[in-house]
Length: 164
Image (tube, rainbow, N blue to C red; front, side, top):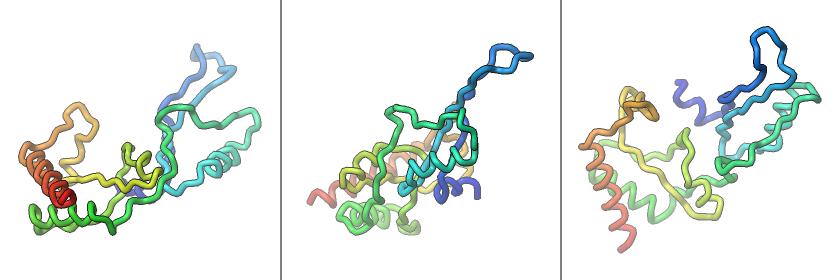
């Protein structure tokens, strides 16, 4: 499924293209910004070198942007912690038919900065259908109030268990 492709592969998407000023004039220079969603263990210098070898043009420079969007290399969070066990126990109590599984998300979170410093960090998703996920980042993004209440209960129970 396309939805899972970026959980198993580093993806590159050109998001900003600049060049030229008139339709009948060849631009003297151009620029492309590429959104790279890298897997946690991706060797970024090697990726840039591979991109340069594909382009194979010494007049083209490939370099990372100096932005706050650069995520640090970070290991996965352990599944053998009190917090993961608390999240799993809360899920089993509130949604007994669901299975707690680790899953990499395709979006960026601040957890990479924590994990890079040795802090385990977990995101939580209430089970949803593929159709319910269609509105993510759209102008009609929404969550059902019942699901929001369930999410709040899950977080509260996990925090209470781990803080005892």
